[in-house]
Image (cartoon, rainbow, N blue to C red; front, side, top):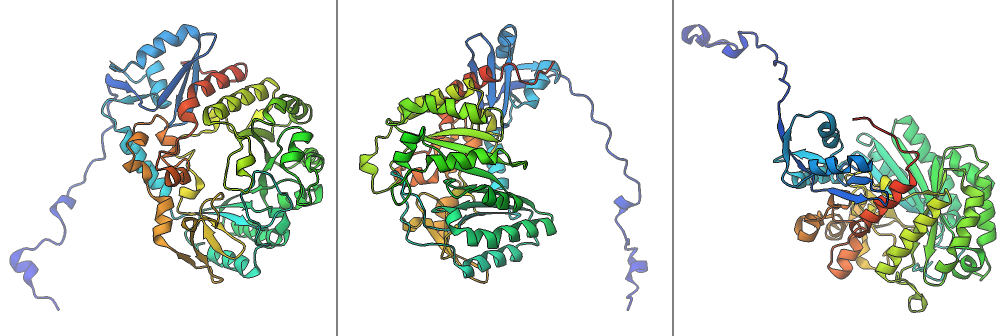
Length: 480
């Protein structure tokens, strides 16, 4: 009932501020001169013909200026800064991230960006071990092959976990790994159509890839995988047949190059959109023969941009043959990798990992560092790193149940997903911090106590020169 106090004390029924209309905001005036300084995340290099190449690791932008423009652009990027209106070359450099307004705290921006990327709840990434056994016995392999195909109850648990998260889920990514994933084809036949259909029904952004040795990737199998939405493959060839067959034989000791190469050539006739990353592992033994191998790849794949190369140095990753491997030193491996990239470009072959693929904030963060990424083993073990697997206790961060519940060890989980750069002064000063966020490889930090530096920290200038020379005739020209 009413107490009648409103009339006695004249109590207003709405705020006095609401009695008068409030005009909308006036148009912002066009700002006059502002003070500009260069971004702390710029890398610059000069090509042999005098062009200036710029790359910004925060935005992932790359620009090339001809020799006549070089002095003027470098003047705008001087440490002392300058005053000017946001127009012309100044606006271009600002839009691309090379210039920032004076007083901008770029490190704080990285902290905010890391939070947005790290703690999102609308994304789920799986690395699924379809089989933990393998039909190969590679000389440098570190896996134990103690289990076979992923158990049916584990596959049920994965499905239930996805269903439980559908109300918030927007992005779903599935990578098939092993062992050899095609050794566990029944698990893929069970789960891959489920992921495809669920993503379509609930309008999820879906992507799926596979790391396979390629031996079982027959045209019939490839057609199935593509129909299930698996559109990216990593397949390893360690040089010409005589080198590859020595390092990557079957478990019975037989050669594998010929079968893999025929499967790769057959993939060219698939009309679908897909990407094959041909990984070339090198050491001191096979490096001298890689030139002739690139000639072979040029003949078969130069004109198909779906096939791309990347080069990786063989490491001593914890396998039984580590002491016998003739691995390259760190600096030696970097030089060989750059040399091989240059040789591949000369032959018109595409690369999957040149600097243009490092697309800004978080582009080089290891999957293991993301809280929404899980390796699921054949028996439901939840892991983070595909090298540690379950050989090291720190990497087994939990267990998946058949109901889809993640039973996590919070301390182990935090070890992999912490914002490590916030306590690493070396990382905080690094020019490529936006790209790797201090977790290019969390395993290195755990094993050595040192910053896990991205190769770009030392190679960026050389990468920029190589890339600029390779794209000289095909780059998009901008008039400023």
